[in-house]
Length: 228
Image (cartoon, rainbow, N blue to C red):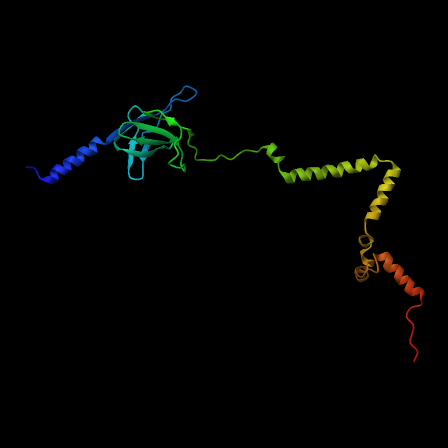
């Protein structure tokens, strides 16, 4: 009689073989211009779950791949390629069927995307880009600079305002000059004669008031001497 350990081992291997599956798929090599892509032999297709990980490489035809002895479960399928960027798929392997869904990294695993056909079909998004080329000189981007726009407006006002002033009537120009003279405080016009203490005390509003108060004190004869 055979030992019980050999019988149990044979049963375990038989159960494992029955529950293992083979997954087939291919990488789409067609592009819109009618040409065919050539994938590198180092292109690696990875089937990953929380408990298992399977790897497959491109076969001799340059497009197809096969996973052997895959156990039932839910997997994420990705492609490691140095030349192209591929989408990520979700593959649910059951006893009766294989379901493929679109997904992306960071997506909640409970949410399934659109269903995809089986055998698995993977089409690259775009070529892999590792370098960022330096942009050349673009005069349009130069005029989008806010500092340059403000400088141009200021320069335009310097040239335009004198022409506007020359086109005014003499009476209008004189009126504008008078309004500007009134708007400029006397303290700014004569900062050396401005009495800050009197201005803060409310006794004077500028040099004119301080000058008038000084003239009044002089007309009064100045301070009187006290008799003994």
